[in-house]
Length: 159
Image 1 (tube, rainbow, N blue to C red):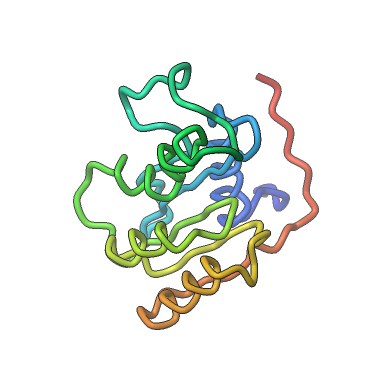
Image 2 (tube, rainbow, N blue to C red):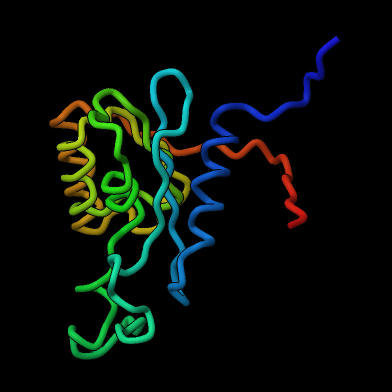
């Protein structure tokens, strides 16, 4: 008889997204993303960080100050990294699991890539202009989005 306490697809893919976010060197915000095909196969993952070739020792991690002395003009978000990391061609009809609701810039990339469903964990910027813009674009483009429902299951990694 097979075991019945295995994790669901949503738990698995959100777990991969959250674990991917742990690769981020950002001292304040770690966000991960996982793109999944219709057959429940992982196509790509990403996390927030600087573009390839841009040393995290030379670019700033600050959140405040002169714009060019902050991380904001330089960091690529997890969703964009997952889209750009995919080498297989078309992402049409796929799902994106992400630990933080996408910003309006990532929403544009998600729509353009053909991703049709976004499952997110936190929506901590709900109600901000960028968040409202993301939801408005998703609604207009027919991208479904829903908040991940935690099962309460604890999953531990001993690495």
